[in-house]
Image 1: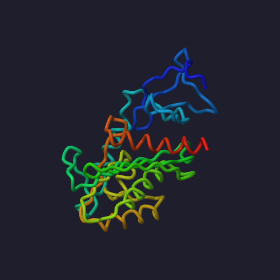
Image 2: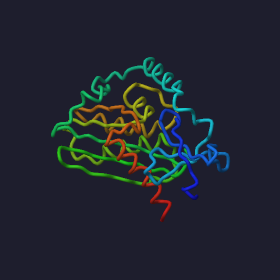
Image 3: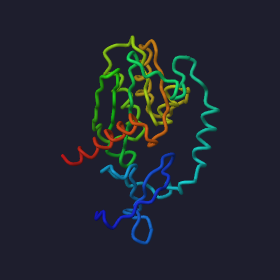
Length: 227
């Protein structure tokens, strides 16, 4: 597609702010009944999504519903799985911070995961294509793979995710109808850690670790398509 004929308009896709591709007249560019979006203007990977999921930037009803759902959600019985405010999460040399993200083009469709592990001054990045999967599976798989990378369970661990679904099923006691085996396997891994928390962050809000994990996830899909 000729990019110099595309205008990018700020819109909202589900709970995230995105850029919607429009023509010179300001009308959304469509293909096979889907609209073209990207999360960041500088990223190469783009998504074709259902137009009904794209709303004006000031449409916040979905966020309001999400907040209500979180208030009604049952809190996990394990106190060390509750989520603190981001500002209170320690970033010291003893805490392992893992930023994770999953992406799926098509949902289900080609999917990738991105992981950024930080421990003191040390760091490691993982970008992996996981085949055809839903976005929720990719988000969970990123967390699972990130935890399996750790060689110790004695250090404090903080998982940072922008997925309300992953946060809910792992920390808020949400009952999942799908992906139960994957969720169960992650909870089994989590139970081995002495100090573990899932931290919900806002997606595409300029949080460095989260933005990097997103880039690694989408790059995994793009690189798989280039091979």
